[in-house]
Amino acid sequence: MSEGCADSTPASNPLWGRDDPSPVEVTNRGGLSPFVLLGDHAGRAIPAALGDLGVPPAAMDLHIAWDIGISGVGAQLAPLLDAPFVQQRYSRLVIDCNRKPDAPDLAPAASDGIGIAGNVGLSAADLALRKAAIYDPYQAAIAALLDERAAMGRKTLLISLHSFTPVMQGVVRPWRFGVLHRGDSPLSDRVLALLRAELGDAAGDNEPYAMDGRDNTIPLHADARGLDYLELEIRQDLIADAEGQARAAVFVADLLAEAVRATQAAR
Image 1 (cartoon, rainbow, N blue to C red):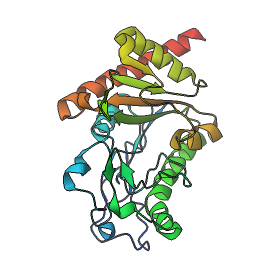
Image 2: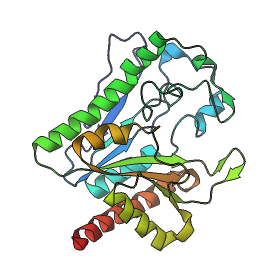
Image 3: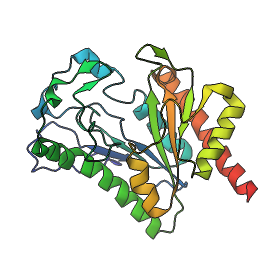
């Protein structure tokens, strides 16, 4: 196990093979900034026991399988902010960790018009195996990190990183960044204001998605602990390669630092 990785693979789970990666990776765990970065859909692995889920290999490169670019952005953003980055390594098609365990799209039978044959007719026991193998270790790793920080008296701002496809079902999405929120986050308000000042209408307010009852990770961890949060969406064509990911990491690092400074100045 490399330094900074949380190896929480449940060895007894029949989904796991010898070469399957751990479901969760934590880098820069001891980061001293207030930020904790999350990547619910950062990976696109499939447990060997599930084969290819009946998905064409090329489809695993698409947005249906993962949040393109977020693993790279988060990995570069973590040292810039001196923040931990917790990322989930398995495809959202296996199980979507940003959905509640009883959500109908927890393991979708189709996504953006592409059938997921391996998810058709799943039983409650099938879903329970996936939840125990992937969802539970990921959410437990986040909870453990937040508990550690609380015990040390560290302030935490929870940052959930996502990316979105530039075109969805033929509809062009003009936003470069989007802030998803419920109207209860001073950090989100400040970040959105800064993005609007910089990008105008290319900064989306609850676009291209709204933070509604479907979201799971932020409500699960931020609400119970009274933490402020930001759920940030980045358009995927901006971060499809290493150069774009590096630019985005610098931009987001500056954005978050400015948001914290502005919030402190307003007090």
